[in-house]
Every structure is written in structure tokens, then in C-alpha cells.
Length: 153
Image (cartoon, rainbow, N blue to C red):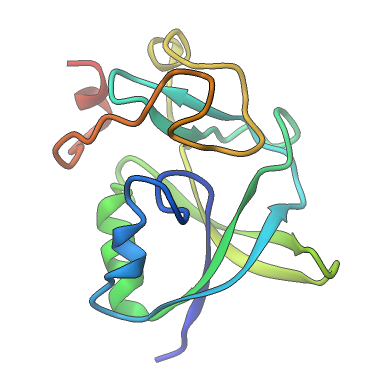
């Protein structure tokens, strides 16, 4: 099977609460490079779990900093499950620019459907997520979030 490139911008990054899903992946997950999405998106921390969400509003917010990994089908499937794809997040191919100015096409998880209930709990848009950032909204390690509604129960 072909390995695919995935761009992580939240709790899956190195040093963040869910990085173990990549560092201890059952399948392959190889760090390739840090990068920045070519297009701006709003990255906010929201819900009672303080989850970082990339909202489907291209052109708003900032160009997001993250990490590019090469993953196999096994790891991709596990990430899909973790991210609640396709029910909670959608996954789209986007362009990311690396430090050497080269560009890669990568899979990015994006929150397509959300409402004012989520936005009411959201921080201002961030460019670079850290759970321990000065926003004071550290990630809450909850059980697997089954649905959008779970975020507010």
C-alpha cells in the first residue's frame, strides 16, 4: 500500500497530549517535516474538552503551523477513528509549504459542520497550537468523542 502524507496541527503534534497515536502507532508514522498550510484557516480551541478545531472557513484565521507525517493504511485508519472521520471531521487534501519552500499535498482533518454553540466556546484563532499555551485551555483527555453533540453534554 502507498503511504500518504497527513498534516497534524493539534494534539497529535510532538509534545502534545495525543502524540502517542503517532509515536506508538501500530502502523507506520514517520515524521517528514514541519510545515505551514498555504491557505489560512481558523484554528480555535473549543468545547468543554478544549479541543483544537480547524474550521472549514478557508481564507480566515491564520496560516496554520503543523507537522507532516508519512503514514500507512493502518495508521490512517486509526487517525480517522481518533478524529471521528467521517462523522465529526472531514479529511481533505491541502497544500503545505515546508521551510525549504517546497510544497506537498497532505491530508488535513477539517471540521466541516459546526454551529454557534461551538463558536460560543471558541478562543480567538491561533496560528500554532500548544495545549499548554497561554490561552489557559489545556486539552481535556476525555473518552473518545463519539459525536458532535458529545462536545456539549
